[in-house]
Image 1 (spheres, rainbow, N blue to C red):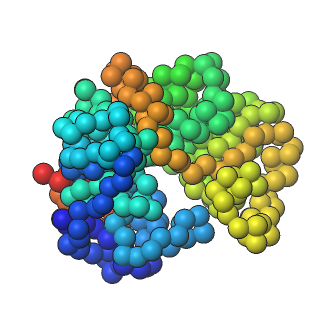
Image 2 (cartoon, rainbow, N blue to C red; image 1 turned 90 degrees about the vertical axis):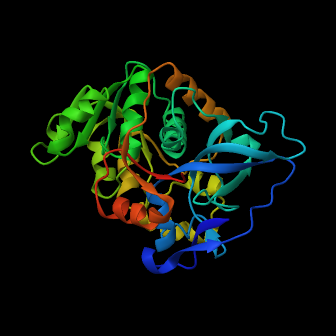
Amino acid sequence: MKALQITGYGNLTKKLSFQECAVPHFGEYDVLIKVMAASVNPIDYKMVQGYTRILRKIQVPATIGYDVAGVVQAVGSKVSRFKVGDEVFASVDYLRQGSFAEYAVTSESTLALKPFNMNFEEAATIPLVGLTTCQAFRLGNLKAGQKILIHAGSGGVGTFAIQYAKALGAIVYTTTSTKNVEWVKLLGADRVFDYTTENYLDQLSDIDFVYDTVGKHYTSEAFQVLKQGGAVINLPGPFIDRQSQIELGLSPLLRPVFALLGLRIKPLIKKKKALYRFLLMSTNGKDLEQIVRLIEAGKIKAVIDSVYKFEEAILALEKLKNGHAKGKIVITME
């Protein structure tokens, strides 16, 4: 089979290449999937550039990609929830084998049946952003009636998070550029800040939950609008809190590094008595099934920026890295 593999850390065009590989082996609890579509996420190109080495190391060459939608081709002897021919989707464990390939293998526990009202390209946009948001909102205990600030509302995570937060009954604030303001409002945001003409810091206060999808100065700014006892869930880092370090299994030798990275953030957390957590999504089919119910109820829809053929996958990664995608970028196999 053909697969897009990372051969080392560095430039995308130099360290990614299409390779002919054996169809991946699957164990007794695994499912082999014929890939129909996959979608691109920032972690895909960041992994190639080496930014994620501190969190998860990989042995190269390795097939990249998290999100997959496809058809079950074979199942392990102890798989009980899926059968050959089922249309499924998942965020696969790339430490085993990624999704940018003609076939992918993943544990039964990561899978869910594809929503009946989505095609494969639409379904492929959901798993990573959906699972990340579902787990973030659970961790921060987002409730109906609470106010949430979601940065980068027109991006892959943002477009999903706005819809999911509204489905939970939250009041949603978000940031985006001028060209996307009206479009993002249609996703359900209650107030959209145009960051080119407005300063959200001047108009927001007592926010219950900040979904920090951008990092940089936005992380410290979160505490300027956060209410006492509120929650900040961070996706990009670089500061990783002690509890998250333990859950990720990071070496205690790295703690001085994170202590330095947290010099600006820790006093802000203490002052607001806030919950601050760094989140790295975990693959989970049960969480995905919760999202499926919302999709099939019409509360969440896929937002696709563009679709690339499999042989154009490196171009898709370059586009995501270099531009502001409006929703998700999809790779189709057929």
